[in-house]
Image (cartoon, rainbow, N blue to C red; front, top):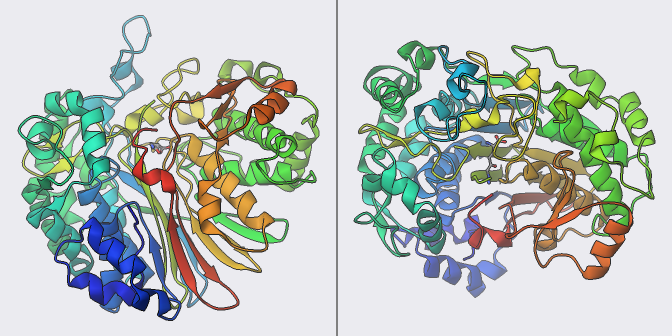
Length: 571
Ligand code: DON
């Protein structure tokens, strides 16, 4: 299904009360839309109704920040398995008027009463499922605070106007698409056994068929409370009490004070240059921007060809190996642990690390210098990219972690709680569900934000600006890295090509190169293996990248959606 709607075609779209797939297709192929002047604004998101909500905000006089709030809120309704009010995320903003760049950190936080022992048995072994299911898996949500913050600090519209489409989709319902049907069926058992999830997300106890109208009237009321009361509409009062009661009834240890205390935090993004391009990306508590800066810093020391060519792929893999080792060793919530960010992203360190890369042979992760102690599936997330006519931009990656998060809908709020506690490191030798290992820097602590891989990013070069990001757990970083390399290498911008290119990934541990099925020829694999890498062809393609590009020369903006969006539903 196509998920692009140009502003020029928006008038047509409004003729459709609820945007059905055929309607989007008609808009895409109509001659009028094709001959319209190139739009200066563009939005890419994982769902056509969410994209439409963003254009609605722009049409009402809102800016990219209002549009991002509208898209994010709508995604919470129409892609409830990926993100939502019960989750969190990062909004990377660029304000055209003064060039201000900031990351609004709406990452979830660990409740104050939580300790590592909640997840370990008396012998110190991890308790199966404790960090991924039920009340202990859920962290204090950050999404509502981030939405309110972005709207109030940076938007032009009242919050209620930006939330209106989401409220409408929740109350009136939307047509479940084949993706919803497939993901609900994949998680049918969890939804049948979860708290209130069968009632909210299933059709008479079974995964709905595509075409089923999914209504979430309770979520509509909660969104209205946020629209009216701002953050207090969620973090205090009736909704807050319902959240605490639900998390605790399912084994959690939430307190009202955890919610009252929650704040979205403004952070300075990670910003660096790579071969003349300027790259801005997520800061801690996401590891993404640092990993990008480190990988590209190492790759800058080499002459590269296309990222798909085996010799270059080998270098990319080695750079990722080193960046993910550092992630495991050093990264965590910098509000609570010291993290040597400047050193890690600095040029000297990149040169030192690059010098350990052998262009002819893989370094075994076990042999890579570092603290050996720290040698150090299944999720979903969503990304949106927006630019408006003034040049304000947003890249936001949002998540409840696994598909349908912890499987707990809190009471009558319609809010599905995340299972983001699994992104903490329980023990250095215990990987999380993305097989990521870590160290003390990412150990569980009260009020701490778990380390993330979400990597919303901007790339600026002489061609223009690219806004991108993706879901995919630890594979987010390699997806964004490959897309940046591909974008910078080509004088012509071809977003579809950028998105379609096959993906590979390495994350230090496990020590293997994961590759998408069908993407790589036997010759490619043989060349990589000849350098000493183990290759694992995984079952499914991964990611659902959303990109927007605005040309410096023409001012024209375009959006594109990952072709995988319609088939993947699992990390
Ligand atoms: O913050 C993180 O890194 C993860 N919770 C993101 C999860 C994710 O991307 C799953 N997606 N398919």
